[in-house]
Length: 301
Image 1 (cartoon, rainbow, N blue to C red):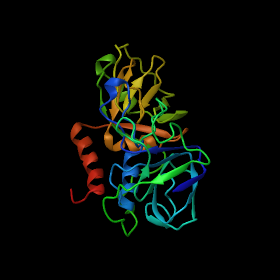
Image 2: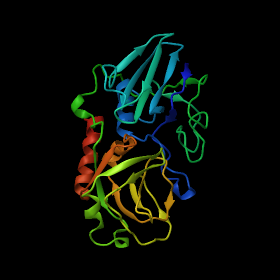
Image 3: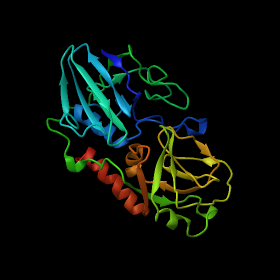
Image 4: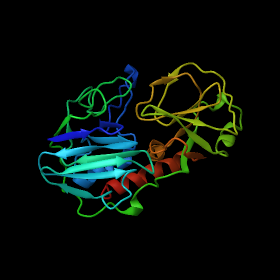
């Protein structure tokens, strides 16, 4: 059992999410930075479906009632205790504290966090305020049960530095054009990829808003259509909204481009005031980038 001494700013229980339910209005959810979360589970030898803690801006303080093992990855993990397994003895504490550079830290406990499965996942859903054991972020006094979703031995060494994603602004994020290219003029995407965008304070697990001070894109209105993570919607005022893990399942703004799967972790780590630059790629490069990360996670395929 793990006692939550303080919950941090926004700490939730997440796993790989509940894909396939968008037609019911339920976002796929799950880890915002899927790569850092997968590495945390890999370090402690968890099954890939094990739930862990996703910490935003500042992390929790935890007390362990029994011996255990943890791994901390993502934005917090710039120090010596990051991206490596760590033994926690009975009565010991783990304090994450302020997070940065980057926005989100992941804490995996060997065996995973055991909470009820809701609609196929243990993840907290921000839009629906359900799941994650409590239907809310962690709070002081919560107690977490450690599960048994183990799929191998913990890694004996730190995760290689050259197998981690860059952590900090400016963020270069690759995109594929469309699907609503016809809603814009022929040079809109070219103009978008030529400017720097600024992350606004309006961000959460549902999405991030970006300002483009030197650019105003005007897209034609469209009928409400399904949305996916990474979809870059352009509002009538020219602001950009990029969907993250808990994104709305439909939207009425045209999508000028979509962030590739391999770069969604970068966008999930962007903080208010950070700079984001988009670069257009084709499907071949997008798949190659995704495969690079999955090969790091499972080199034996």
